[in-house]
Length: 382
Image (cartoon, rainbow, N blue to C red; front, side, top):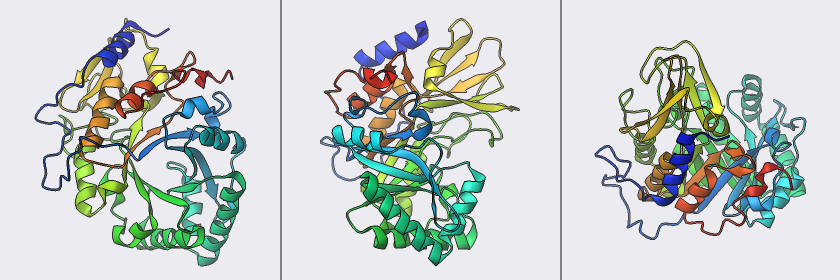
């Protein structure tokens, strides 16, 4: 059962206008600002649908209404260029559901945080023969199942060789797949983590850059902090969405190619507040966070970062996450920066009792009015 604090927050977002931002607002005020965004419409509204969640939540066209793209995640590659299809991975149902909803099905390749898979992918990218085999197999795969694009998630190429090999891979992909297949590059949200990116050399091969604007804090951090802060806060003035969007634009990335990631999960720390030392960190889906009892947890709002968090009343744990209010503010920032759109990681993480808790509000803020049956079929009981 959803707790009182969640019900109130959800209901208030359905009726309240978007709050005015403070002087640390996400609205850009730099000289790069382009024409008026009054008529802005997103070109990309994508949801990622990982294969391992599709057994519990089978894809259905009603779930995808309002999206322009749906990403099936992830497959991999061996060092020799052979496609690696995980056990349980399935394409037919997701591709059909996406197409029936009028969305383009895309196949995501790679995935962060998988060391062996990343090493193999890097080895493939560094060898011409392996790249050729990879692209030939990928071309057959997307043709067989009806995908309309590929999304490369190689988040951390290493050194000069990785920098060079990414350029070679993206160039060969474009040549091998042709101009009609969409090719996207998934990048870390911090530009410092993407310092290896030779933008001028890959840009002609890439349709969109998907910036993963989450995981700004986690197990690797020195102090606890917010998962996806919109603006500068008390812990860090750089690790936030607004500053990083500006940094990528300053690097030369076209606004019309930038797609911003929205998280449907939170990050936790075993401490009693933000900017505090911790020993352990973990993650929970929004579905899990929304079920936490308000008698045990106290929800709060970080006004500088424009995100919620909650602390355990005994002072032993903190969760940073996003809710309807903070996600709507992020969409407004995307609008103000005149970017291409947003993507969600990932679409099943807000499903509870057969309904999406966050998705309807996000689609509404993106201008999607007719949401069919409120996406109630997401329970998997079709």
